[in-house]
Image (cartoon, rainbow over all chains, first blue to last red; front, side, top):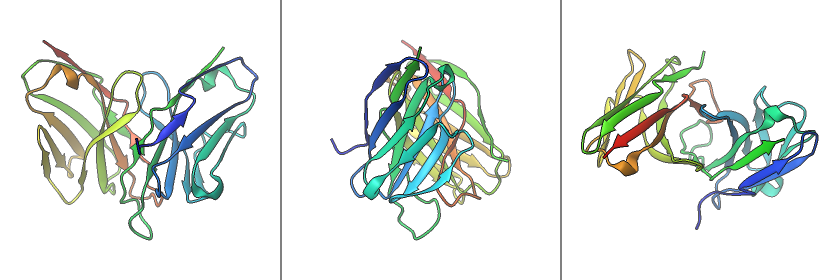
Length: 118
Length: 113
């Protein structure tokens, strides 16, 4: 399967613990996005990478959240000192920018990591 | 501002056509997408349309775009029980250089046999 993969698929943790999620994008996709989806809502943008550079962060991404994309391949999203309000589905998407600039590419999503904070 | 709105629920009978509607506020949006999400799963891209188009057809799917009214619709012909899912419309804001998507809250489509 050459789609976007995410691990783990489910994570249950206690409040105050740290968690880390991994996303493996489609090979050679240079753009990678993280979104968060809470129950009954559409996904909300969290952050964006072009290759290894993190170029945009949403105000939803508090200082407890950090994302990396070393070497421009897989990405990790870490949440420190988790809170119950962090419970959500975390979605990763990737795309291949076909132009030097501009958003004219199509994002393909992974299956998501469902986080439950007790 | 950037806002996308959808009706929350639609119920149809198998074999009927389904029409899911979406409105958006960013008049500079150039690309609009439809995604499908089945329970517990990620988002599956269904189709997209460029703002210089009024209509796009892809097998059972027809997308209509009224740019003047900022209204987007997705028509599914001959709806099947397997089409039951949540459908999201999404836009790429004209101000964005990153391609981030702004999603509506989703329309749950229920298909009755």
